[in-house]
Image (cartoon, rainbow, N blue to C red):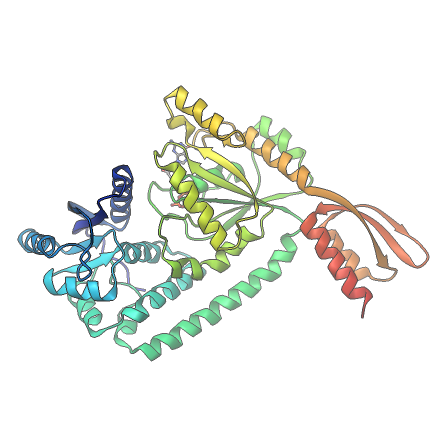
Length: 433
Ligand SMILES: Nc1nc2c(ncn2[C@@H]2O[C@H](COP(=O)(O)OP(=O)(O)OP(=O)(O)O)[C@@H](O)[C@H]2O)c(=O)[nH]1
Ligand SMILES: [Mg+2]
């Protein structure tokens, strides 16, 4: 992948909204686009809006507006135009004929940020896959020409050489990437069984909510934290470890070792192919005992962000996992009434400050409470000499009692329903061959 240039590009933003759209929502979407642009290294010099009854299908915005932007771009030497709205291939082509600089939409911008922030081999492969899949239907001579002419944000994409190759080569590359990712995924799956004997928590949430800050706090680590969007693209897993005395007490009451995973943040309209290619990273989330949904309570738009996160969890198949809503950054809520209102609205939530270490013991207490409701006891009968199953059982559950009877072994187990079901399935398979 090609590195993005570090020089800030002179950028204008363009935003089209229908007349009946909520103005508060419009402002929030625009603020998010500004933050995304800044994260990508753009220097936003102006924003063009258009609010209208209907959009012009040729350009998204009206022709007059296109001309106004084109003039501004030329006058002020602007090198990048970013649309909040998703542009079709034809709209992009039409706009490029009028406005003489690089044009991106929000999906493209997010892909670019991901490309820039990918650090591990797996994240790089995943981003490259998403970029190629995004590019494939849009690959034209025009694109090749543009990327050569302008460079910078949004064009580093899958690399010069691939842009020059034809679609068939890109397709081959896509299958190679899928193959490599499949291999990483298989390795991960073998490690997953090893981890089954641990309690697994995943931090999920909107980008910039404070997931990595909370991971650092709970596991005494030092993963990358930044007031930027998509600072984290990789899942890092650490063991729960805290030096705080109050918290130590809670931890000592956990039945098993606790592992916590940090994950990539979500955002409204996350390009679908990004979710697709990050599915294997996110499978960690799907297999967790409990999800900690970290919410930036200081963001006026946090409720919509919560809904986006829930929808994305549904999409990756984690919608029904047990979830604790963790309202973070309460240190920023100066208005006491606001906080008590929030607590009233979300009686099951936990209110913390990851940065200041506020209420962590409450959070862990809640985790403990949720876990004990999930754990159950079950007795299973195992064929007498099935030592292999017995050794697997120790990985999957707590063995409370074992009785070696004449024809079978009777084990009393304690574990999550999922793990106990899995043991029964293994036992059944062993007994029947
Ligand atoms: N005031 C305040 N700021 C916080 C708190 N927790 C995190 N932050 C700040 O919020 C910003 C984002 O924090 P991260 O931990 O990187 O957020 P994240 O959810 O991991 O973000 P991505 O990985 O980019 O999705 C950083 O500037 C943090 O210092 C908090 O409790 N209070
Ligand atoms: Mg992070």
